[in-house]
Length: 159
Image (cartoon, rainbow, N blue to C red; front, side, top):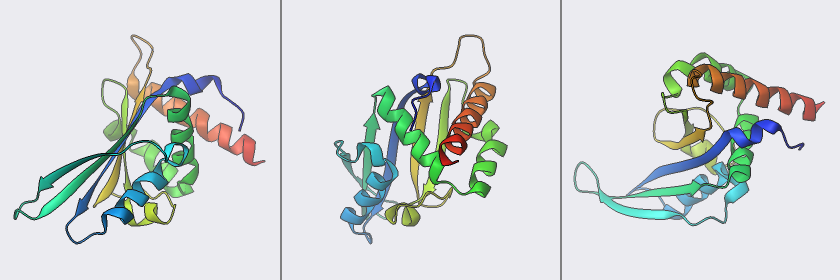
């Protein structure tokens, strides 16, 4: 894939997922790593927690601070989304971007295990992409424009 000048806009990505007592931690870890294909060898931070009924659960978190790698993850996630999910992402940008230039996505954990990217709010792999937003600009408009440029780049490479 050609390197876009917009690749410097993606500063980092943080991915996290809960592994419940009834789930195989190795499979949940596999789903998390599948989501971040470019950085699957990164270290996963593991926190042991207690659930609502004191059942054991684990929070797995993976952070990527290398801009090039974070951009690759972002492009891979966007590329992996269906056309409907891409449209949904753009439609919901107001709810998914905060004032600091962070984009929040939730992907279906079961689909991530098989390597598919599907937007899903229930029991997700949570992604937080941090972007460089020019001072004084609207983060929501800026990130919407950035996503559109990534979609254009994906289409150019596909044809």
